[in-house]
Length: 146
Image (cartoon, rainbow, N blue to C red; front, side):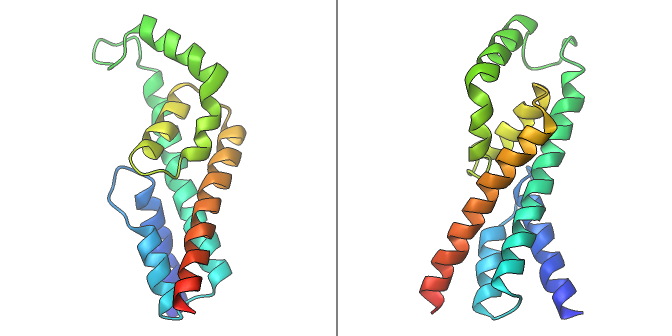
């Protein structure tokens, strides 16, 4: 039962960290590792999965709200939206590898949904970026702990 609480708590923390909700999943993962709760590989996989799921929620929200871009309250005018969309199609998709970055990562995943980036491409890049970030944090923590 303790394992469920450990991994479930980390999953929720990582999920929240990928949305506009506050979260400190890296600190939670390092704390769990330091206290010997959970195996490093499972901590890595659970944190990555939770964080990616949070980004998928952002993508879905962006996709949902893009249907309302013709409304007056939509924050971007149609001409600007189309210009930015064209630029994003050409250059911006690879920015999803930075979806792990504080502050901009949430926006990148929301924009990807708004611009209807292919879900599987989105999922691949976001998973690579977020998994690499958690791997780095895990390895750095293990160097300090050991």
